Image (cartoon, rainbow, N blue to C red; front, top):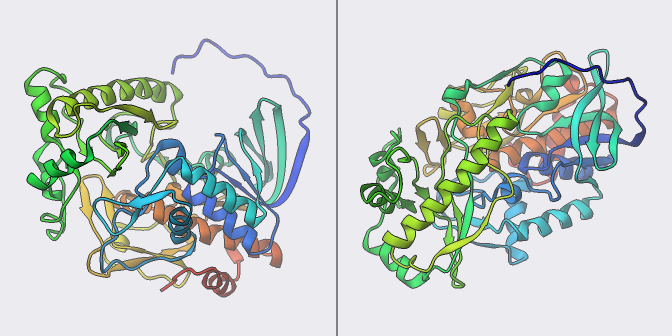
Length: 456
């Protein structure tokens, strides 16, 4: 980024507007689960979110396939992630997912589900606030500074959970982090939903030419599977875009337009269109995100035009809506007390400080392995403990781990597992007046079991 000199910002007094026991920043699957778990463990909990709704990737980005990896032998984690689906189904905000035994969560309906969960748990909601700085006493975090329409405000807390996805608070508090080089980051996506699709005609086309996970490797991507995935059905769309490139409808260099659809509704809506993949987008750089938000919307419209011309049932298709913000898969991670390894996620890692389990699901960096054989790993508490900062846990996709570990733990359901563990640990550390690195793991695990989490 080009700079044009510097200015001195005058010192100022900032009003402390709120005090709490546990403060969670960011309300994606990890942050929302953390806040609910903390409040249910019996301490005052506050949830700060920069947008006007809770749910993060589910609601603001529009990634509705929360557990699309689920198959007959998949081992379930239980807990709040499972509750997200059950509550959405009960509210009429979920439909069966196209490639698995899970449900696709309606991104709009889930906003109401999340509101209800927050209110029922007694979590203090604070929307429309962007965190700009941690408040530190030595190497201990004691709160945050936010910026909003109300100006700068301070919130104090006994424990803080960074669920920003990008380790924003950990970085600014002085914890060691590392960021994937931009040229090797997983691509960002602009999600969109369509209307005007003839469901019967589209599904007839799918039945006539079913696609598998092996078809992913026929286009721009090279995918490593375990072999068992290759013949499984995938709601993959590639051929319409290949034809569009041949006919000049899509420029030849945009051969990354391809991917999956989520569900087709009787109303003619086709939702969770994961077709736009934007390499080189840095989710920690607002200029980069600006450029790719605009580029992503252009590519989405090219994709819709290709579907109109070449996909059965899509002749009358039109854009229904975009996600509220670009979807980021990969930026910073903390250097944690323990960093999860590729070996852990591939070979069923086991840990004495397990705060939950996650099935053998890896999706990213050219690897796709689905949990169809009952294999799973445990998620260790220590992967959320940043080095060098007291009073802070980091949860969600920024937990400590290597490249392939991130391809597993970045997924929303795993973020919910880690988030629930973080919320319980933070709450119990407050109640027992113990630091986060000395929390009673037996007590944490007992409370997680009480909250319906599978630990082993």
